[in-house]
Image (cartoon, rainbow, N blue to C red; front, side, top):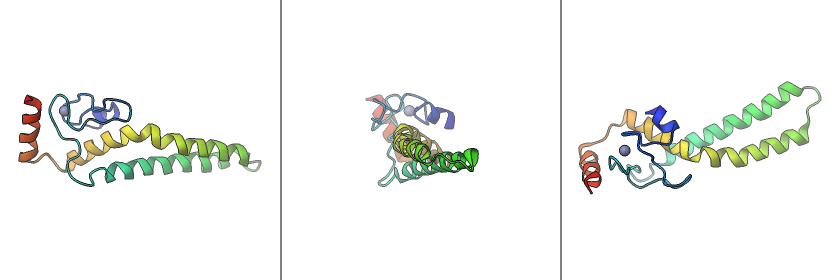
Length: 124
Ligand SMILES: [Zn+2]
């Protein structure tokens, strides 16, 4: 499921989960899975995205200091870090959602009513 998530696919059947880069479908076009399983569901994706952004910041900032010490180019390091902090959460946004769906589905399997709803949606 993580492999499917990294390709921005449905965790259940591997069909494309997004209509556009940022536009997640409400239901999977192939298996009918409703992606937002409950209210507040995407908080997990937000936590994943925030963690990746913070990890990138630490890597760039602390790594930049460590690699250039003692002549740290503070201006350049600041610009690179700010640009990365603007881009990483945007670029990682779709993956944070598909990764969250895959992880959450692995420890919280679909319930009977979700399976029935997905089958009804897939049938049309
Ligand atoms: Zn699917």
